[in-house]
Image (cartoon, rainbow, N blue to C red):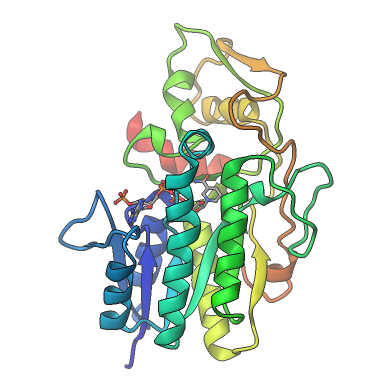
Length: 298
Ligand SMILES: NC(=O)c1ccc[n+]([C@@H]2O[C@H](COP(=O)([O-])OP(=O)(O)OC[C@H]3O[C@@H](n4cnc5c(N)ncnc54)[C@H](OP(=O)(O)O)[C@@H]3O)[C@@H](O)[C@H]2O)c1
């Protein structure tokens, strides 16, 4: 069987690991995963800060598809180091898409619900954007860079992610679990912004399905959304985590004020119907996902 070559940037990251695993387990695909500080025998070290390194790996591997997942995703870090974040989130995206076009590959660029202001949900892919913080602004610039290099590229916007972790701090959801587990200390957690927790393994399936669709039909392109279906605050998520494992929850207290630090959208719910109408998608409930993710830590 002739395999289709897919290059995955950020394959050592929270989402990238799930995406790499999804393509790797599927015999129709030959996957090459890239990493930086966490490169190993399986994942190739490529510094996306270097245009030369980007060009070399793309020209050598000649992918037909690139899933561009690498980014600086921590809003407070982007706020404090905007130029470094721009180099990764915008400039590297332009280079990846430029070299992709040279070898005839299309790129699926991973973006975020933070491109929206979050006051008129649910957001459709063509709704006007208005990012409130530097992370959202650079990711939106990344989208534009991806489309400028090749109009046939695709953008997938996703909301807050969780999934299999190497450490609790990897995701803005999983970092809360140690505090949920420790009932000796009060844990004050946001009960303000509305979020839609989305499992990385579900996003990975969506990305593979999108890539397969694009290979069948070259006119399939543009901006798409994929989101979990449950509206929850971080406080709601903590209560589910506690319930799933029958843990005490009296120490978990709701904070009904906006999150401090980089400004967050209040409710940037992404409408996923453009993909759903094409039969693309996979979802698990937060209860199912939380059980799978945290079981190994009990
Ligand atoms: N996590 C979320 O809640 C969320 C929500 C919406 C959208 N997104 C988007 O989803 C995508 C994936 O996010 P994630 O959560 O998987 O991020 P992550 O866990 O922080 O992973 C970031 C990845 O980028 C790589 N990277 C960083 N600097 C690099 C460099 N100079 N050269 C090459 N690679 C570099 C990292 O490699 P090393 O670790 O090996 O250094 C890592 O694989 C991002 O585009 C993000 O904006 C994430």
